[in-house]
Length: 119
Image 1 (spheres, rainbow, N blue to C red):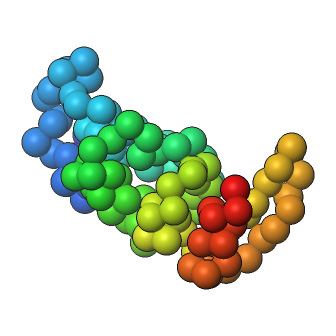
Image 2: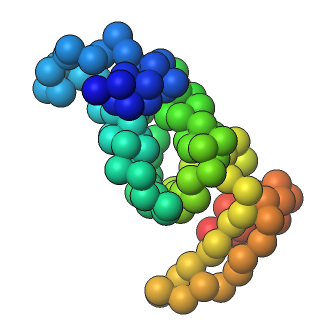
């Protein structure tokens, strides 16, 4: 459909339009999953370790796709232990432990770095 092609084009995935999912790399599968999430027209999206197991090139592409979601006005919750991804993509940090929120703040490299160093 036109909407699907528009999403694939905007995420630089249009060249994969006719490729079987089993033939995609891990990074391509992750990016196609993001495209699928956009197509769902949900107000909120949750991603669990979206760059886990990806090489640097695909990590950067996934990061770009997550930034694109912000431009669309889609709120994303990203569960990750990836400091660089948080700094690149996120505007806020929500720390949780044992199902409880222990901290919530706008992105702050020093505060986030201290959290990673002590944990």
